[in-house]
Image (cartoon, rainbow, N blue to C red; front, top):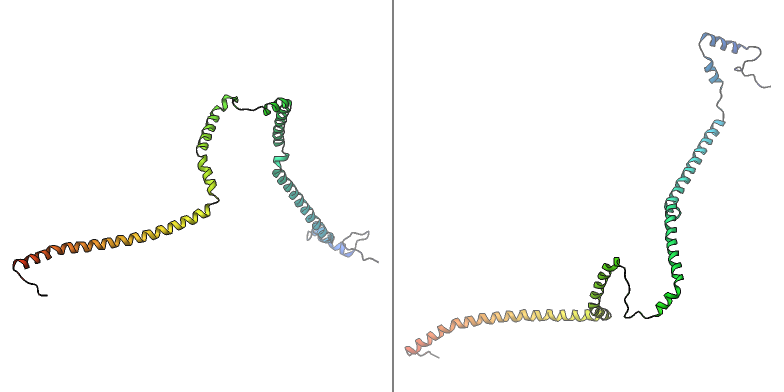
Length: 220
């Protein structure tokens, strides 16, 4: 038989109930305190917290999905955004109109392409005249330098051989420079010797005149 709960009021008051009633009447305890003490910690509280955590994680996951969708929308804005789609549709419509005009004039265009265009003037709108002047200047400059450009292109296969020849010529030039420097040094030495000889000639002539004047015979 289950034991009776002393906190639950019964049809007949028990001693514990009478004592607690006396405490409540005297003010030692309050009814709220008794109500709190009556509540037992249920094992389902942890399940409630686990459910709250699960709900928060699900909400976080949902927010992450929304953020990822926003990122995808941003990356694909140039494909799916209405303004970009309208711009692309307008471009495609313009191309379509141009192709339709070409197809309508297909026969005349074919005849014009088959006909030679030499010695004929091509009509150019006035707004493009300044661009044509600049284009003609570039064409004249290119034609003037065409031969130089072609010569450079012809020399490209022989570039390695030309570099070897240049290296050989530089080596020979270094040898010639060294020989020239040595020759210049020898010339300077010869000039110094000539200066010494020139300075000695007057003294030798003076000595010979002195010997002839006094008939001095130099012993052999």
